[in-house]
Image (tube, rainbow, N blue to C red; front, side, top):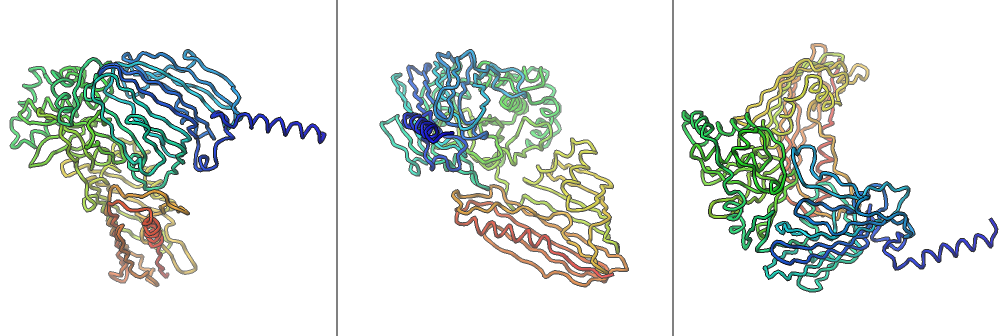
Length: 631
């Protein structure tokens, strides 16, 4: 290539980039700060909501997103959910290359049109139009525009200017024009920590919000990310008018309007359930019989047609069809309990592994799940009605320890669901282990799990024997040549205890070193996980569910073995928990290994993380402690 030609190409490239500096579609104009930790960058987003009446809302969105790598593809936001209450006015998109030159434009008919509900839903009229585009290179940019009119105003769009981990925002605008005469309320959260400006009462702008990197043990994203929520005091939900001046009024609407006339059961069902519970000596015993009846009769299948996404199916239909979603099954169980004289309350909640509460300070359509709350001894027993195997009153790891909205005849009321305290979340392991002079062992192991730990293992019941065997070989992959001789399980649903009884053997657990055998006495509960190291931690962290592990193993040694060296007892104490481990000689041929690990539930600052990681690292180190036996 000649010097003159190379120079011309350089100036041509510089000219192209230079003329595009003001364009939001040019990937090279993104600042280095916004690219740091980002898989995608929102270059421009404007969301405008025009409220014409309690049952008419026009939503207009313009969005430009630059995708930096394959992980950012899902961040384009080029989709629109709709149903029969939504009238789509416009949907279109344009894809640009790295320099901001148009690659292809897409009209509405070129968008994929699919059901927006997963395969667990039997019927649904919720659909989604989304842009399907496979890039040939990165970065590239997607510009998306949409407008729709909807009569359902119960769910007002939220503004979340940072839309999740690993996505930054160059500019985002949120504006509401309310000409309906209906009072519109709003609530902002975490705005003070970000570059967000209130232009007017219902108009906000955000500029240059850097991407947040996901970090281990971080609290739920909603705890620290900026968010704006809206709610109309009068709204429409699929033709049903609602009132929302407080949680009480909102709950009253759910009870008297939304769920009206859904609890009627056939007379023969009332007769049957009354007969089944006639010998029960208490309301709690009656309730357990009703709960088991519901579990045995029904299965979970989602049905979301029309208002069915929010309104329960008729209890009589659930009884006839023997299926329903969370709303339907909770409502059906409520009707059954009512038939035997027991009060219970339909309950709206966030169902997820991470703990997220209904915002008790802001009444609005919230939650993604429904359960049942039954008053009992000045408190509540909460019932998960979608599972055929969950014990009565057990809600750990999905709806525990969070604020929920119970629907009473007097209106809505915020209550807190069951908290599973650290001391109750136990796993107790006991083993008798016979060790020979080659380092091989045979063992009998019993593990009893309660509280949140009960839920870890109960799924084993439904597995085939070969899958159970594979599960244990993976769990104890530190043991070479492990053989699962037998397995027996006891699922005590009354006391909510899951017990595993195993017989095991292995030919090479202890390693030979001359005439010595070296082995780790913590055979079955070694902690190998160390939280990741961060050069600079940016987020607080939390241990959302504490637990206690207790292990006791008795080793019986071959007569040809003697003890040469044991490790010293270990005791670690911190704000995060405690760890104790020791091995002691009981007789000439018997040793006892004991270990107890307590991890405390709690919320901690980012400055505490280094000490937390060190606590875990020390546990891993001491769980690997060895002893020496001599032949």
